[in-house]
Length: 270
Image 1 (tube, rainbow, N blue to C red):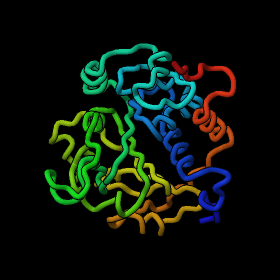
Image 2: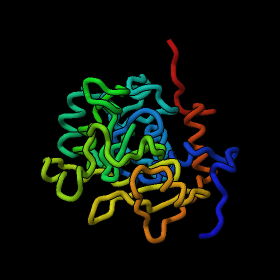
Image 3: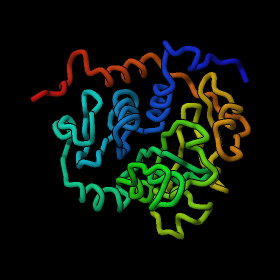
């Protein structure tokens, strides 16, 4: 493997979160419909729309379809989403008409815990459901996204705490315990296709559905990825070295974070 400049050694150039965001944005294709959450997924989706995927249709849980925010929304209820959307519908319509019948191409999810089959926990850590060590925010719309989107991308920082042998609670099903489980459970979506971390990208093995490290960011190593994983992480034969963010990607991302310098509609204050 050729030597690479580390994202961590060149913090002035770009941060680990920016690398994750750019990697997630690159996974989105032009013309897709994308179910977007707030935070890094929103940054990634809006970056993709500003760069290589101008026809990406952003759908937020609050009911906005085709939102085109000029800067990153503060929440799914940010008025800027409704002001710039092609349509605003009810939350039940988003779930019952758009999401559950499989009309949305890709959904982003985060995770407090994730296992080697892409099962996600955002409910409780430790103990049991009634008396956990930590009670997390819960499911929200994540189980429906995991079940019904045509594909799912999970964005999560890699550590022993988050990458566990077995999740303490299955909030959102990935591939269950392996091949055939999604079909047995009647889940219509294809399941998680990528886990994007602060070290690289994992993808499911086509036969076992166990997530395998297939790509590394500049400066990240296989040994670091294995050290931060709570199971014996499978490694692709020749993991790709994922290109660092381009100046154009970083400029577009940072302009969304700080708002447009000119043009576009800035958030109004009442």
